[in-house]
Length: 328
Image 1 (tube, helix red, strand yellow):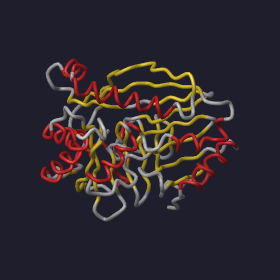
Image 2 (cartoon, helix red, strand yellow):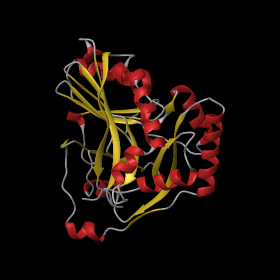
Image 3 (cartoon, helix red, strand yellow):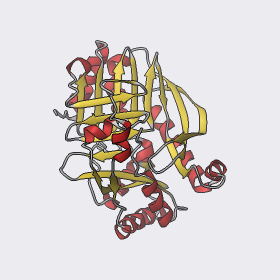
């Protein structure tokens, strides 16, 4: 699968959107590698996608086959996670940052191939690219339509079966602080390309069904107005927002430095962005709930936001909660 460098990717996206050519894309976390696939060149043997009901081949395995599927995610090494957590906490205590998205990777085992697993899952956004990635994300990144740009930062997770789960989640001071920081960052990012910014919805709660049981997550909706010629600059607009605020931290640039020193692995395409442009509309998602398929050993990658009020064990357990497969 051909990967484009940043400058080439921007230019190609600008050209395709200006000519109203539908295309699918995936950008890695660092923004250094981008896969761009015009829909008329898409092969179902190389790539499958479904973004909020819009996609290509989508025939699930038989219910009996899914019921028998066995999969396993190893728990993260607590000592390694604790080391990374401590590095982040020291950076926060030193005043370098106040919010950092700390992530890790764990070996993933399943009887199905990644392509088969894609066919057996359901999620708001799904993408499989051969020998590269499998993603089933609940988090919208950017929507663009009729000159309006919208972002939906997602921060805050709890098991839905916990006592008074929604009230506990909304009343959690650490989660509220983390969410407020991310919304502030998203507004700053959108101000680079849009005007008349507003938060239309704040900390609304969604229920997600997972293989580990239902979970609740909080999101917000931030909206702005783009210039009239936005289609001819679609690639520039997208890359101006990368990497996403919800998967880096606040302030963003310093948080990226902290992440680089704290995390002991390469994120690759995890926490990058995947999206679809068609009919003058852009719909994209943050690549979370992610399985790295670039080697023979598959890896599930997950993480969460760290603030001064974070507890290492609680954050570690939240990572485990996020390691799920949303089977149909």
